[in-house]
Length: 480
Image (cartoon, rainbow, N blue to C red):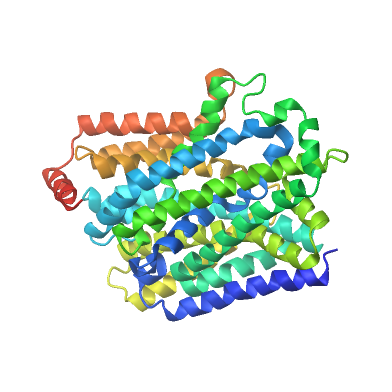
């Protein structure tokens, strides 16, 4: 059972998050404030919010567990992610920030696509529905992760752990919206980085480093025997997903000035590289420390090292870092669901003249509703519906990545081409995942991205955009 000191430290951190949410409530008066923080987020907050909302519990649980089990051969996914994130900052951030404000101050990606293509509603509806469905399952997965952590650390039963975790996450997202999420992500990003650097340093600096040479040599190389080019490509393909993740792209849309983007990019990529190195080192440190008594669940390596090596007060902060990683992603997903429902359904189809106060209220109610649905799904951690969560990153990357890139760079891209892109990307991801052997072992994001791009280009050539759409894009290019 966890000590009193650890529990006090842990809950003190959670109280800090709620205080931030309460302060953010006072700064939230319009729908734009709630959804994008009024487009006035600073470079440091934007940078760490991008990182924290991106990585989730995978950074402290999944990746260290994979390294603990298989060694540095799993590090290729980190290489792909860093490259993909850097390209996302370079190719997308500036253009998306300018273009979304230029197109009627678009607050969501479906909203942007509608104004970019003079869409009567079909494209926006498809994009919004796809976003909402993927994120409900994505959020449910995070709820399960948080519940399992509460269950293991605090000795609670699964249902109680799930409900407590959901209540904490929803509370500050419900209250403060984008301000609360971005500022809590900022603090959580700092805590995650500290935790990932401290744990392996303590393990390897305490004498366990002498055990590294005794590990299986295949654990210490990125190219162990049996490595194939197809396998490396499959792992690195994860980086393509960045171009289509709504909860990450919304950070680009929210930054105060495009002049801050280079600074924000450097901070974000620096944080990411250090965090990934820390996660890799944690996995190897665990492999050394627990060499004589292997863990039943590799993904608990960070938790187990924390329990064994640190005093209760520090352990409380490190455990809070794990929850920070999980919560910083879920809160962003809830906020995207809120913005989609508010802007792309409620204002578009139900109440076009709704007041700002009404829209903020609808956004908050949506956070609550989506969280309830996700929690209900998560009540059974073995529920087959949660298998769809595995498609979330690849689904968003394949369906929305090509759309965003083509919409930002190609004036010949049409509304019909965009519809074809989204549908093709989503369908290929789902079908490819069901196949196996040979080329079908490649991560489904890569073929989904390629086929979606081809579909968009071919359909746009057959059904070119209207003259007004081309003219608008040319005007946008002049603003760069």
